[in-house]
Image (cartoon, rainbow, N blue to C red):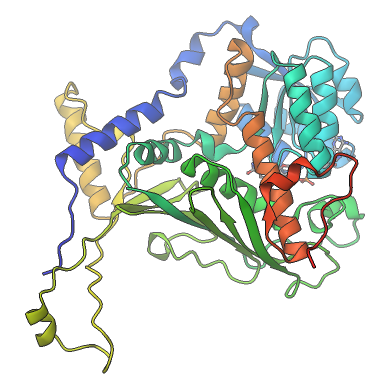
Length: 462
Ligand SMILES: NC(=O)c1ccc[n+]([C@@H]2O[C@H](COP(=O)([O-])OP(=O)(O)OC[C@H]3O[C@@H](n4cnc5c(N)ncnc54)[C@H](O)[C@@H]3O)[C@@H](O)[C@H]2O)c1
């Protein structure tokens, strides 16, 4: 009979420890309520397009900060920014005017990628704390310059918008990996598949379609893969050694010059690999039994697997944990009796797969001191999870946790979970992955050191 290793009580206790550690990394939402009004961080938002207004809508629910200014070069979006803030903020078209205001402690930057570095640099030089969207910077010279600036202004917070770092599920899974619960994690497969993905806005200047043009954008690698490359770096606890890839512009011929499909393999120092795809012609996600689409990661270890995704405002993050099936104990006598499925084929003793367990967050773990009703509710939820009727949900959207955590770092001087180095490593990976696809070669991460230093970018090897 196939032997499937089932989780023991000890495993659940270890998982409980992981969830508790992950949950305690960020302050509980109730704590901020006691904050005095004069402790609010006064901030401005630079770039109030799609993401800037999304952040502003989430920021409305966070009372540890107050939006006092917004800025956008495009009038309709500037108006949207004022409306989304809901605090009657001052409106600017030139971000330097916003930065000149002495009362502003911090800025959140959600401009297009090519316009991340300049406002970030100017904000640091103006003494502001900075939250900047991913991918943090666009060019190799900006990687070096921002690293130097961050050292020059160590008391100012510089946080990057990689929200998975603030998800309870992702943090729990990271703890599970660190406790060895997945064995040796050797491979991660990640995808972000869309259909049709980005389309060209008609009758608009190129800047308004900035994602589709290389002069402004790092394409799918910067806009989508950056999130998941960061997940791999975090879970592996390392940065890649080299990257290879194939990018193509084959299916969306609308004048764009960024790839519409990318396939990348990142090799990490201990041989681990991130295998990554982003395409624009199909959005099936072969995780979670096909119940989600588009994006997710499959983290594979010698003793288990985790399927995970961050979700959206409409769909919660989910994470499923699979035990690695033990190999079938097939004796030679039994093997002789069993008929090969395909004539001539050797019968593979792979072991039977098992259903995935939802990764349990702290709220579903038994502490031992809960009331009768609380305990019953936990049993009920876990029963519903085990039957796939309900999935565990994070209490809070990671975007809210991320924004609140930014203000907390501003107030306390703590280092953000997604700090400048996380952002710069992520941007480096984006830049080098695009180079690998453009030049059709293996690009080593050490090459970044020579790039953007006023010397010629390394060319394709003969
Ligand atoms: N973390 C995430 O999940 C996530 C999701 C979406 C977008 N983003 C990031 O947010 C950034 C913005 O993306 P978007 O979808 O909002 O793009 P967008 O085009 O909708 O908005 C960008 C805005 O910046 C404005 N802008 C451009 N130059 C400016 C300048 N010099 N000063 C002030 N405003 C300026 C534009 O007019 C526009 O309104 C990108 O870096 C993107 O990768 C992150």
